[in-house]
Structure formats: C-alpha cells, structure tokens
Image 1 (cartoon, rainbow, N blue to C red):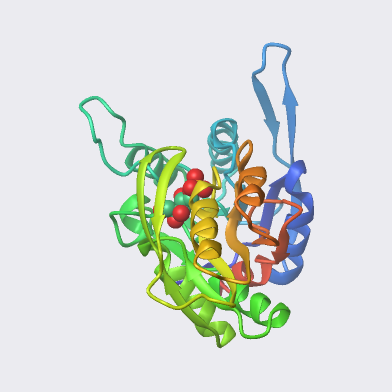
Image 2 (cartoon, rainbow, N blue to C red):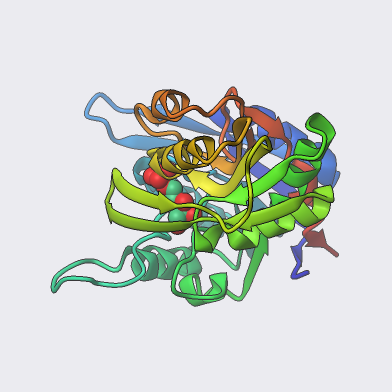
Length: 297
Ligand code: R5P
C-alpha cells in the first residue's frame, strides 16, 4: 500500500469535527479547527489555528457538495503555505470531479484533469477512498501530486455484510463495480457476481441480470457510490424480479442526491448501509482507521 507522511497536525472544518476527532485519535496526532466566516455577500473568510512547529499538516475535507469546499481548500492550503508548512496533505474521504474524465463534445471541460491538476498544485499528497475513476487506472493520473494514496472501503463493507447476513450473495450493479463487489465478497467470505449496465442519461439507466441464480437468495448490492440511486434501484428491481428473497445495498460513498433513497426503496431495496466518507444516517463502517493506516513515518 502507498503511504503518505504522517502529519504533525490535522486541520478540519467545523462540519467535520467528529470525523476529524476520530481520525486524529486513530493517527495519534493533534487536530485543530479552521474557522469560517461568511460575509453578507456570500464570500468566505478562513482563519487557520496556530500551526505551532508543525511542518507536515493534513487538511481534512470530504468533497461532497464540492464547489464551495474547493474554494475553502484553495484558501486554506495557500494560507498554510504562507505560514511555512513544508508538506501539505489533503485527506478527502470522498473526492469530487473525478467523473468527467473526457470531453465527449467539443467545448466540454474535462473536470477531472482540471480539478485534479489544481489539487496537485495545492497539495504534496492526496489521500482518498474509492475514487470514481472510469477510463484511467490510477489516481495519480488524475491528480499528479508527488504522493497519491487510494484506499478502499469495500473489504470493510464486505465484513459488515457478513456479520449481519448469513450467506449473503454480493452483486455489483455494473461491470465497473466488480472491483468493489469482488473485494467486499472476498473479505466477507461471500459469493458474488455483477450485472451489466447501460446508462443513457443522469437518471436513465438499464441493468441486465447477473449470470448467477438469485432465486431465494438474500442479495446485497455493493457499489462505490450511489448518487441518483438509479443504478442500485434498477439492479434491485431486476434481481427481485429474478426471484431474490431480499435485496439490500451497501456503498462506500452515500451521496444520495435528491430522491435517491426514495427511488431505491420504491424499487424494493430494504436496508441501505454505507461507509462514513460522507456523514449520513446509513453510515455503518468507519473509515478513519483505514486512513490512519495510510500514514507512515
Ligand atoms: C458508476 O460507474 C458508479 O460506479 C455508480 O454505479 C454510479 O455512479 C451510481 O450513480 P447513480 O446512483 O446516479 O446511478
């Protein structure tokens, strides 16, 4: 496993104080809050805490609802450098803007390359979990920082599933999810397979059956992220129509935009579990120990 240098100080924003405390405890480092002030016109002012003698600093920011958080990172990272920080790590349990990795029409921004390049200018190291990479293999291609660390919550999800359900059948809703479904199933000692998916638009997907008999089985769908929830919803409907006794779902990143959970429930999904890369009531797996293990030195 790739590692990042252990920080002497972890900086975090008030809305991630609980996660910051858990991560600081797991790493055995001090953590302190970045104070935010919003001006009446919507602009932000940030104030970093005293950094003391810390030469290596990590900033925690999970990048769901990312647009304003990217500005926060710009302000915080540049200010930390101004204060003399030598090595700066971004800990982004959920990393945004990784989806758009190519221009499909003339004029489309390749957000992954643009945002990734920008983060690489701000940070010496980036640590994240299950980044949403499609056509590239490694995070360093998207974020050309000196150090990138990609972790996965899939094995922890698999162990959580195995602890709750005897003999669950793990199914990934599309070919890409094989990496997470397979890792979860292996960690939990469970059987697994994947469906095939065709996506025609943000909310328009169709899924075809996995090549395994699901009749009477307790299926758990495993994927990296649920955004609109349509991928999991359509997979669940198809699996239940094929005779599965029950269908639950477990994801690393609980984005669950707008009506996602309602749509998933309407399509027959029972329980929903997630890792805490994004705070959500479905959180069932803590990723702080995973991230702490990625710091060395
Ligand atoms: C796709 O490649 C991903 O692994 C997820 O399956 C997808 O992003 C989920 O999106 P949604 O919840 O909007 O269907």
